[in-house]
Length: 544
Image (tube, rainbow, N blue to C red; front, side):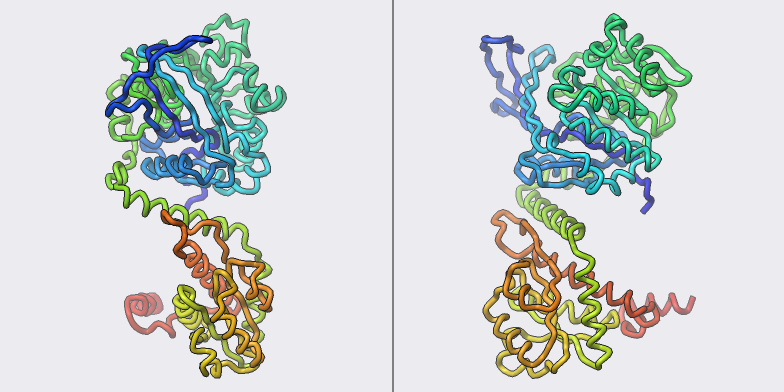
């Protein structure tokens, strides 16, 4: 995989938008009615958020996009991650936030709206987390986008520093007036650093007017002033139904927006930025880039909510409104089975997502020293002509059978030791100095404990693979390999799903370490796989 395989990656707000239609947006101490939506409900929940929205619109126009940052493992977070899957947005998310971000959005008949945000996990993101947790994913983007909306300014500054170090361009959406940003997101110095760190700055006119009061509320004057102030950055100011103003190398001017009848102006600027990123990726000049961006913003205004949950329809409408030069775009995501998954399918995908996230966390947190110690124990036993056995009870028994087979096929001869039969004579296959790899999620299974006490009485060395570092097994073993997960997946969250996958991953990783340590070659592997498709492929490779 190429290191720069994503057109744009973003960090910032990922929000479950709760949309209401109302007779009008209220002032203080006023009352009004909430209007029914389709089906008679009073609220519709959609994916949203400044960054997630613009990445989704860019994806609808054919860009490969990714999102990273902090979220929570709650119903709103799972809802948002399912939306990312539907749009093909890749993810690198830390699910340790207090709650996923939400917003209550009240939309008037003229398309105007009032938004009340609960930033949740987005507002808890730290620069250290960006640096230590997401730097590798960030480096996959040719552009790195962020926001002044919900993400702490210090995290924006850190993301942009990492992006520039990786050779990526930076994009910033200024969505809040500076006074509000300083009140809720960080200091004046951090705001200035974030703005100065942007190669492409996309403020709304309403947000930027406070920065440049001498511009008199003129979008093009604001764009020129911002470009001069921030060392030649390209500045594109959105100006509502009037379109946008651009101050860039080789072009300064206004680009008009296509006329539409607004249903909801929520997220129009986000859709605009998604279109702008797609235009730049396609190599359009600035006037046409503004036209495509305006078309996306206009298309967004024609529906309730900002997120392009039907990417085909969103793309088609934006291109119908676009009146610029011909352009070629990559195909948008086409996940037909996931556009309207059944409840069963959603449960399956959510369980799969839980397992993937738990395995990714385990890989990040695993201790290299533990694998070094396990490799040393196995190789040390082999030098003394001793053997390796693998055992487990229940579901880990099946993992143990797999592990013995995998180890044997990759240069470490191993045999399966039946956990319940061990105390009835099968422990006789173990001799002093042998290594027994014991697999148990709890580390306290009664039957396994009896078998392992017998194993230790015969003088074997014990390597534990377990999810419980404080268990009897962990404390009794000579080497402990952690295979713990926080969640199993599935509605009940009880059946061993992620924990079994973690055990398989850990023993597979150990086999890879042993393979490397002993200098195991492709020829060695071929000698152990003479039959089947794999054997045929290995023979063909050796003949070449």
